[in-house]
Image (cartoon, rainbow, N blue to C red; front, top):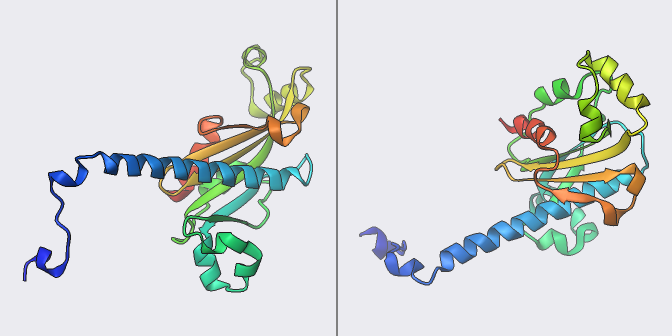
Length: 202
């Protein structure tokens, strides 16, 4: 019996003549992008509700449907999300060791296969590019001290979501504009931080 006699579809040129495959792929990309925006908003807002001056917070991202299979009691609490095969649930990890550099902690982070992504939220003091360019090239600790005392410093909270497949989304909140409507969103807002989280899946 040949493969097509067994019911396996063998595509031909007519399958994509109307461009439906391209449309479906584009729709899927848009849906995935919107889902990441929702996730990064969720984790950033969750941390924001607990105020400023927090240590970095790390989250694993899992498929909601898979969590419900493991813990059926979650279905009632999650509502409609429990039946959505594309829904993603953030799970906060143990507190990070604040005494160690963040890049070292991320370098030793490994995820099991059922983790489809990760999110990281942290705060930093930042300067406008022109002010930062005027700082002397000194050691890191001295630079931190200079930035902390600089009159143009800004308290910033950054959140990044990175999926195992490479998709990413970022959110940035300024303490001087501390409301949900002023949170900046975009996949490339904090690329170095997103790259560091992406490296935990390599």
